[in-house]
Image 1: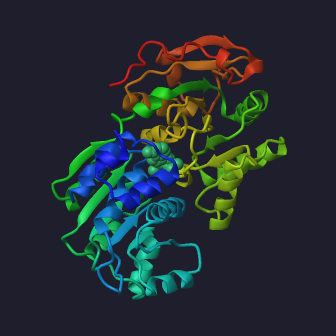
Image 2 (image 1 turned 90 degrees about the vertical axis):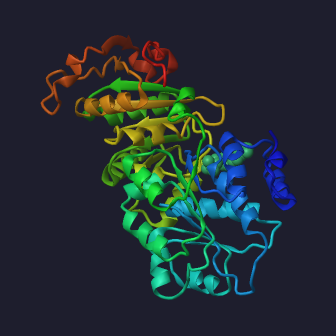
Image 3 (image 1 turned 90 degrees about the horizontal axis):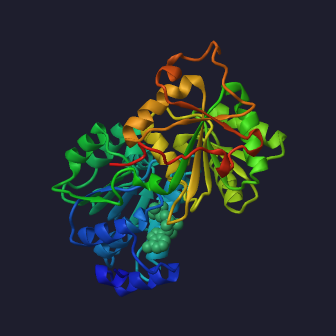
Length: 419
Ligand code: AMP
């Protein structure tokens, strides 16, 4: 299948070929014709699937030329984070290069005046985070009463971040008759409810059957104690000579602490989380992309939607307590045909999280034990559950080779099949 078979205009095809894409990705193949038909779409797609072009290209085509000189906002893309908003906006700008379309991105944490000025001169496509959008709307700096197309990108994350009320407020500001596109990596009851509340007769499109992104990802779970995690991590990264490692913690505080520890051990690292200023986040991300920073330590919320293609390693320094977040995290590696490794450092009190992940993925994991870092069976903070599950394997691994591939047991052993 080629892009031109999807019914896209010459102007868009030109922009696509300038980007160097030769073929549409599966989500693009499925979503683009439906959006072009004017249908509401409910799409299951993670970052890395090409979802942004999947909604941006047909959205631009549906808008066509400006309908009035005032240029009211006719398309709104809502994203959970500033980073994602900036990335989507970059896409909108690139794909609309050969069209008469004005676009703008607005988000909080930066001076609003330039945004207000830009809005005054007329904007066809607005990309926004909910907070700043509502803020500027309430100040009369923008109106949403001419919106024809709405996109909710990473809707699941928006709900996780507590944006449901804001989303509802935004919905109420728009005309009832419009096209709606909802993109989400996971489909909880809440997402289905939200989708049901504003999508009209939506077409369901899926990038891949749920959770199969993990197919190309080697998943390893090391059962170790919390206290040795920093040492083990530093050892793995240094001895494996890894670069571009994305490390996840559950809290901002621990992201900071870990980044400090890594830097002290001469492993260049930066933390990226919600308390960091916009400038600091952008700087960390670009340093990481340019290989100036080896390790990016991130919280789940900060990492969502970051466009970091083809990461070789994702490390769960702490497992997420929400199983879906595990899927998001490991979705950052093994993209676009390249394989990646997702390594989890599992302390005793995190073993119960593994259960949730196994249930979600319909997959069983065996723990690896690192020689020299055997977990203390009598550790007071640990829950006694892991042994009862009878799945710890005592496969000894060389203490010297950290996360080296040879150190793992047959990771794809039984029970690894997916739905
Ligand atoms: P996304 O899932 O939208 O964040 O896109 C992930 C990455 O894939 C981005 O770097 C895009 O520029 C890239 N991409 C999107 N569509 C295609 C395509 N059809 N062919 C190759 N790369 C693409």
